[in-house]
Image 1 (cartoon, rainbow, N blue to C red):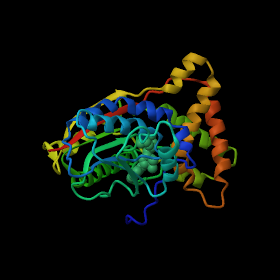
Image 2 (cartoon, rainbow, N blue to C red):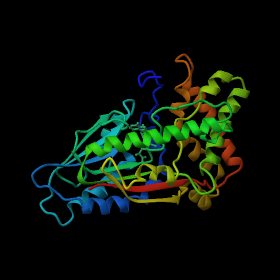
Image 3 (cartoon, rainbow, N blue to C red):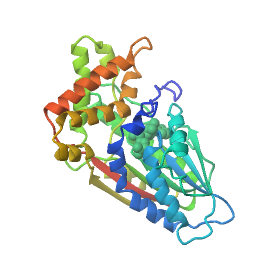
Image 4 (cartoon, rainbow, N blue to C red):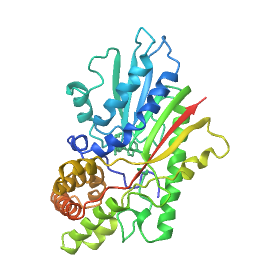
Length: 352
Ligand SMILES: C[S@@+](CC[C@H](N)C(=O)[O-])C[C@H]1O[C@@H](n2cnc3c(N)ncnc32)[C@H](O)[C@@H]1O
């Protein structure tokens, strides 16, 4: 299959819906912000040109505001006068960039509030290719994005995530795709980053005892299976619903760096930690299991819904199916609440 024939992966649910339903992703990225601040302080500011900060996989922007604000302040701290900084938010062509720019203009959390000399822009192209000029990026950031594959390599009948299905060959195909995509991402960034630049990435990892995402991924999948049992989805439609995402282990991430550097990039720091669960924390306070169910269902719908319904024919009422699936998922979680066990990987890449 050539690159152009591959099914395209869908961006997050539009109309600002991801911005409203990504508190989990906001919690995930917090632990990586100190790494970004340290990197921002370490890079050499050049007074003769604008500095460039790239935000890879920005979606609708809400979760970029805090890290980008922190990075800008750290870059400028103790280095008066504050020079111009270009901020480039990148995502897939189908991303809802209008929500991002509206947020930048109108929201109190915008990094433009109270700061001068900032020039935001956006690129709607996949970061598995080069999307910025060679030697142009001073500082890079990517949160909650790199566990998305360039495409889904294989459909499996027994799960919405092939990496969690029973077929070992299918799991191997996902691992092979993860490896290929990671090298493609690194190759492109190795060209784009300037010498002395750093790139901080946070995304879904794997734990020592499993993937960590099993509980929620299975609850989401079972909710689609319910629709099929109720005659709302055909077996063929259900089979095609396989998510183009999977977490990476530390060994998988470190593999290209086995010889020291990869294409001139150095893996300066890497760790995997247990992910926070803000929905569970809120439930501990409120005891409201229905709200816990609604929070998870809305987040899963905003992040994964578009890819699952992208396989359906255009004549299908996708909103109605997403409503039906979300209702079942929310009920499933409310009936058996538990804390999510997921893993976050955080890393710093340096171009020396
Ligand atoms: C879960 S969202 C994360 C958004 C935001 N950075 C955050 O931390 O909440 C993942 C984003 O990565 C984007 N993405 C996935 N694959 C991509 C690719 N190949 N190139 C650019 N963006 C991609 C998706 O479209 C989506 O907006």
